[in-house]
Length: 281
Image 1 (cartoon, rainbow, N blue to C red):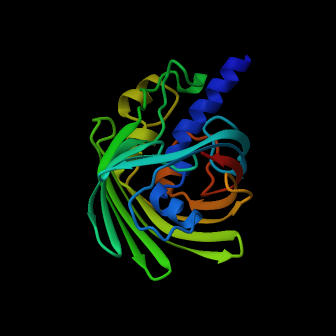
Image 2: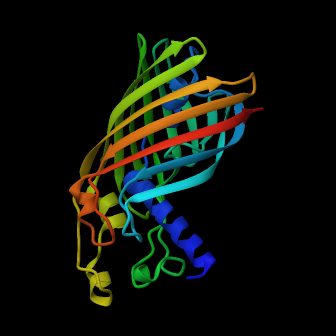
Image 3: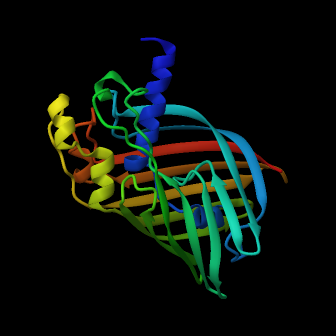
C-alpha cells in the first residue's frame, strides 16, 4: 500500500469518525471550564496555536484493531463583534461555528449558531471497500445553544438541524460541567447526553437498497439514538503565553451506529487521552 493511500485512509476514517466517536461537547462550555472564566459573555477575542498528541480505543472503519494514536495541530480562537461571533476550537467536535448572541442575562445566554458537522466519505478518495457506496458529505447544522450558569455549575443545551440538504437530520445535546481551581491547576469535569435522529444515522452509517445491490454490504437503516459522554481534564498555564492541557474522554456508542456493516470493529464505547501545548497570542 502506498503512503498516500495510507494517509487517505486515515483522513477518511477520522472524518467519518467525527460522527460516531467525537464528543459533541460544545466549544463554549468546555472553553469556559478550561479557562476558569468568570466572564459570562458568549465568546471572547483570542487566538492560540499548538501541537497535541492523543491515543485511544474506538470503532474503526478500516482496521481490525480498535486502538489508535495520532499527533495533531491545535488551532483555537474566537472573535466577537456586537454579538456576532466566530469560534474555532481544534479540540472540539465542531470544526468551526458562526453565531449570534440573541439573548444574555446574568445567568443565561442564548446563541444562534451554524457550522459544518460530521465527517465526509467520498468514494473516489476512500478505501477500496467503500468504492461502490454513495458519498457522505458534511452537514451544515443550524440551531440554538442555551448556556446557563448555576452556582459553580455550567449547563448547556443545543438543538440543531441540517440546512445543507445532505442528511436532513437533527441533533441535540444536554451537558453539565464544573471546574475546580487548585493553585494554578484548573481541573474540570463534564457529563452529558447527545441525540442523533434516524436521518443523520441513516445518511452516515446506513446502507441504502441501491448501495446494497451494487456492493458487498447488506441493506441497513438505523434508527435514532442517545449516547452518553463524559470528559475530565486539567489546564495549567506554564507562562503567561504557554498553556498545557490534558483531557480524558469517554463515550458510549449505540447499536444504531455499531450494527452498521461499514465498520470493521464494533466497540460499544470509545475512550481517549489527549495532551497539548499551545501558545496564546
